[in-house]
Length: 381
Image 1: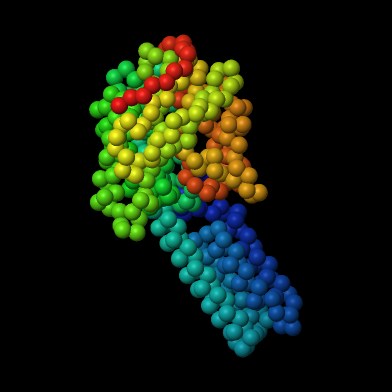
Image 2: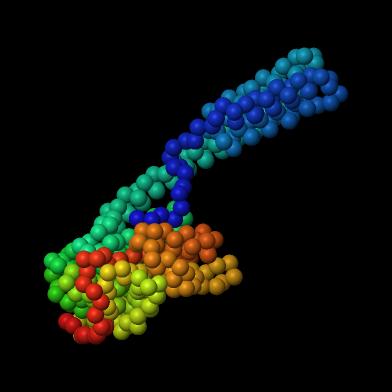
């Protein structure tokens, strides 16, 4: 599963190198020696506070405090050598260095505590992600799979986008969805849909029947947990996909979700026109409201499923990400490499900041699939 970008583990204190620690120590020695050499007429002692301030940038409170003590010692040595140790100026300077060092040490401790708390939050989020979004297998029958999830919120790894896959007899079923909203508030609906799909995918013979089952689960959940002010405001879009081992076809039912991209081995990119269906959570439980669209799908073909966070991503000028145009460069890549290129290109387009969660799922047929047939259409229950 993809992640936004590599981050430094906040719960693991960074160990400063000895060379970095030499910088504040050398500063203390140089400032102290210069203060002694210039005599009482030129006061350089207050500059010693730079040492603990600099140390706080790369070290923790204990190390910063130790450098502060060395700075105080440097001021004391300077006062002793210039015979001004008991003077009012030196006492005030030493007091100021001690007070500022204490404040810096306190801020270091607060910073480190916050870092540990954020690390704990991230570990919980990662655990929730593993429970909620099970890693998809790299193969599902004659299909190769790869997926990427990019959360819009800076410190979250999960949000309202979702995907799941199941092997049902001699076919594979896949769902990608997008709960209204983003980040942690959308987790409840995402968890419900994933659990409902994993169970219902094995119980219904047709995609419309599966969609109706998901709608019933969503409606029950919202009836129990929706507040009066949120009535009708919480829903989810979803795309249901089925690829049978013995047929060179892909069947899809859209519940208000964007159509996928179909990449051919001859470097073609096709955006199929799917029959729109109602989103999940609006109370439409009749399977006849969901249409099955059928497209040819054979060896070498790749289906790229995505959420609207991809096509609605903008650059700093407000220009939308040209998804189909960019993907055309990598139609001959295997699923994992394809999504790697898309992820890097999308983040480069947005400057690394996404306005919405993003989920991407690539499905590629291998040589075990039958060769393509002519496209057709059907309506199922």
